[in-house]
Picture 1 (cartoon, rainbow, N blue to C red):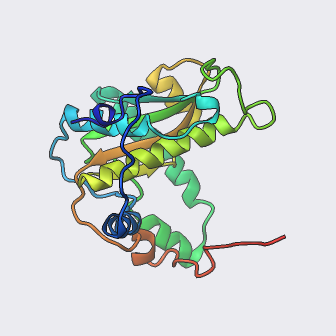
Picture 2 (picture 1 turned 30 degrees about the vertical axis):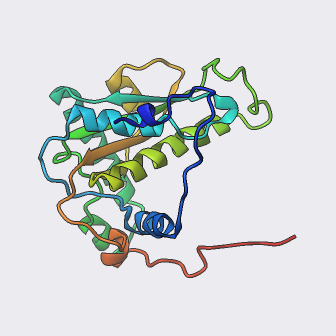
Length: 225
């Protein structure tokens, strides 16, 4: 049963689910075990499973119910090779910003699974969408981008719950990616996702394990006014 089968969008009264203590504990585990995956197995992911993930992403909240996310499945070898070339170039430029031991550590990090991941999804926001009639966007138009990020996060959690890993590649030039994928001018790149079965699973982020950045004890920040 797909996510849409469970949430068909009708207005008939539905039973309210019971998110009991057991569910809440598993949800907390899902948050902890959601990782940015860089090492993938090459096993294929079925089209049916990808459809489930996209159905889940479509349930994300969006400003004015605008649903501005646009997913592009990058399947052609030539386009994937071009994306890998963009990543390599951007990664070299990023390395130049570091010096000494930090540069050595950066150079040793595996920052994308572009070669191994069986599924590539480029995620765009359609900044010209008329869906939602502009509600909520006049003062903060960037909420279209925020909405698309929420769709990515929803897909990410849905994937993890199904044993699928997701890696978000941000070391890319957005305009070059747009050109390679030949999308409309009004679409802006939000994320490039590598999707597949992870080689291994961890509760601790890879950047912590590799010594790049520990968890910040003050990450849960609340200011009161």
